[in-house]
Length: 234
Image (cartoon, one colour):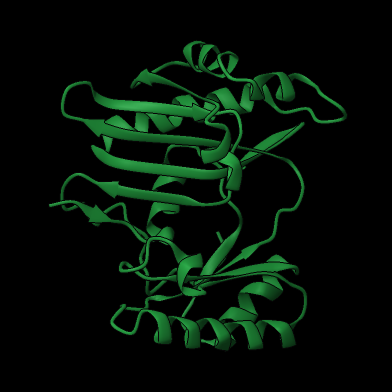
């Protein structure tokens, strides 16, 4: 039976494969959220954490650009109210408080299990909200190494931007390593579907802002985030 990981669980798993994610932590209440925000520094992003909510923005479960404790308190309450209104039956684990990472060039890394081809990895040269519009993507059977990952990247228009275009330049070495690591995770963890979107690319680093993972079978919680102890920023 497929299992949808919460974002906290998905990012915990991603980190085990060397995939950079934003610093943050899970808060069960406003006081915990304030403590996490103080430790990682403002501005921050708040996201609802629920195994029943895959698309958080659809239910009003995301707030960005929070710059003060007062804004955080208001945003925390608004998210809870939105979710209870739009998804009343959802099990709410808490709210993820993360550092806000502005700027950078957005790409996407995805993957799925196909009955014929098995695990397939995807790279999109344009990520974020424009991925479906431009469809600038390439595919490979997983797993792949870093050399093959760069060949994938070269098949997209976005690669030209990453190499240097009008002041934009990306860390190609870090990005191809991330793609290879994601392909390894896809196979070893027997993932049905995954989506890292957007992945922010900077001249000196890459970071996956959002990670969605659906495992093919009920997963072993030994690697899962301990939701009762995930209050300390990672």
